[in-house]
Length: 484
Image 1 (cartoon, rainbow, N blue to C red):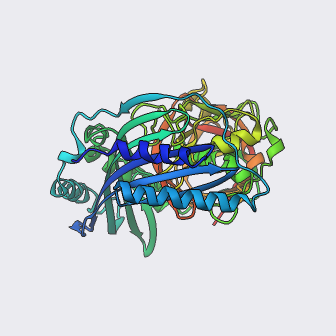
Image 2: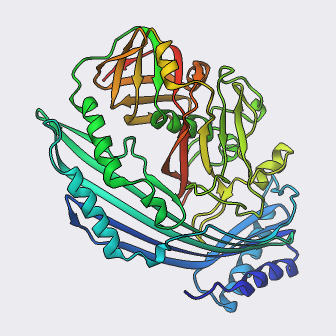
């Protein structure tokens, strides 16, 4: 593989400085993606892409301009920088609210995620054979349930990047990622139901080499999970209606809520209104940092530095060192996700939340790995102390409004709880709840934190960011359960 041309990045930053820009940054980025599919055991055409180019941002008199080129040459970079400088200077004449970046330390470092079995050495045919083997284990009927439509996906990605800014940061990185996901149609007694394996339309994977997938032991784990969720597919008993009771949520469900109803509304660009026309807004306002949103048991964090996580990085795409962000602590919003522009507005330091997924995408505020912090309960203890309730182990459907205030989750494998014991499986219980009510109802967190992979969509043009969702089992007190 041809090495990245660092000199062109330095040239872009220097050229912007010569044009009297108060700030500039440039990154050369190469992303190599391989996605393999099988449908009912037959391979579909693999999708292979290799994108390389240079993205540049400049600030001139408080106006910011971004652009990119996939022609990696000095002439192309000069043309790009000249155009961006002209655009920024022109925009500055009409810009009322000037953009300023927070003052941050500069860093010079080379970092990468190690691979025991390099992803670039795993052939497309090997990936397809892997999926076909899994399909053969998932295709036979189980407990009278057939799976006539099975779509299995394996995705590998290698991201190489070199970044510089006018503050003196110089950062080189290499991050390999791999993820598996399966979407199936289950058919039982004439009724179809779309499910995923693992449940919750989330994948299994992380950063590293092929050993990341091997550690999940999918040949044994996926058939076991499929057997478990047959209880939810076959369930016919209706959930209790119009009753106030307790709900225990499995990590699969609770992890998604950390991302959707805490991480997204806590993004400072949403709060300031920038994402309103693209990914949505937030129920939070700029003066709501510190507001009480939940109970004293509500703790949510976002940490991109978790080793081998899907959202792993050590420095963001504005040169800021990544760290754990404590979004909700003891029920209070204690930190928003910030980039350097929003941090300047809030008079704080950036917490390293700026990410760009391709060379031609502007860095914007993104989550890394968002999760509900574990507590000190055991799941069995939580269950034993629940006299009447519902256990929603995983979900098959969800939605949330643009301001992240009203949300709805439909359970897949779910059970009644009576006097501390799991009873009958129930069909399609619905948790429909506001964000303050949700976080305010948490009274217990188990110690069994689990993560799954996801792709977070945001921006215009769209950027799909690889992330982790995480949570332990949690309990909500005195809420209502509906039925579909």
